[in-house]
Image (tube, rainbow, N blue to C red; front, side, top):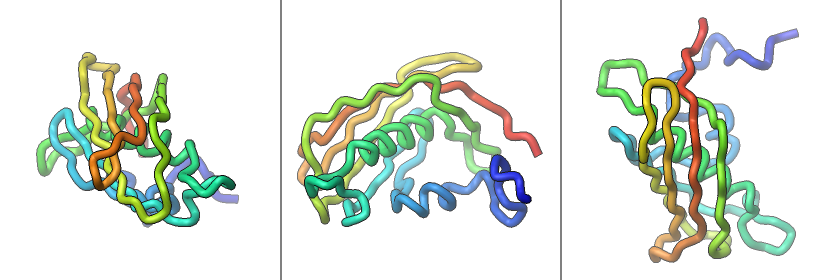
Length: 143
């Protein structure tokens, strides 16, 4: 039986798509030092039983953007990796089917082993959908 904790051998663990990103449908649009933007167009699969975007989707966008913003590396260098230690999500508005969302996160501090990030999620009209803050720990991938 394959080990589900390791990526398949044909999957590059450093790429920005694959696995959960493909399942959910978000895209990393901007990735710079201390900044990341993740986008998502709300689809029927993202809705809850009330017909608005499920809160887990907002949390996913916040977590993903915050995680990326602290892990950028210059071109040619291996990006850093991190896992979430703590995440707070604030639900401000409801996203509807068809809306394009942008989760913009900035690294706000930290050091060699831990970093902090803040995120805002807005729709295509600039309307706030939610915010979040996270604490992340840098890790080293093992081969």
